[in-house]
Amino acid sequence: MAANQKSTVFGRVPSEFKIKAPKSQRRQVLGLSYPLGSNLGGGYFSRRSGVDMIRDAIKQLLLTEPGERVMLPNFGCNLKKYLFEPLDEITFESIKREVQISFNNYIKGATLIKLAVLPTGDTGPSGGNSLEVILTVQLDSSELEIFDVEVEIS
Image 1 (cartoon, rainbow, N blue to C red):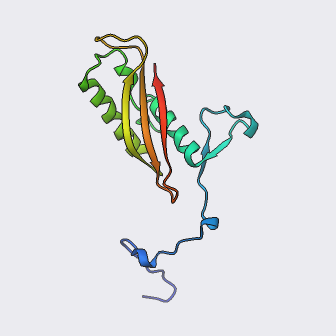
Image 2 (cartoon, one colour):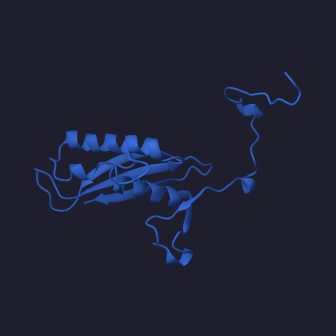
């Protein structure tokens, strides 16, 4: 191998060889606040980080139907199709499966701990007109912060 060629390393680097930057030098991950323009004090494209950024990303994921995003046609959860379905275990398990798959595909930097689906409003055994999805999420950062995200689908 010539001296001016770079060598390529394949595989994982063992943890004892990883260099961790001090907490003050770590790069902060920023994202846009959702919905856009909700925080006019920070400008139309105001930024968020940490818990607020993950909470906004989850709300955006759950309230978006697949096909709405131009460059990401599979982004979102198809939850509105469950609104007038019978309120039974099969429906709730289908909703939970849909949310878990979408969460694992599109939310980075957080882990889903618990997921609950509840009917809201006046409902009967034949179904209802709104559902509430409650997620308990833990950040993957060093703080390991746990928080809840509630989204109403109507």
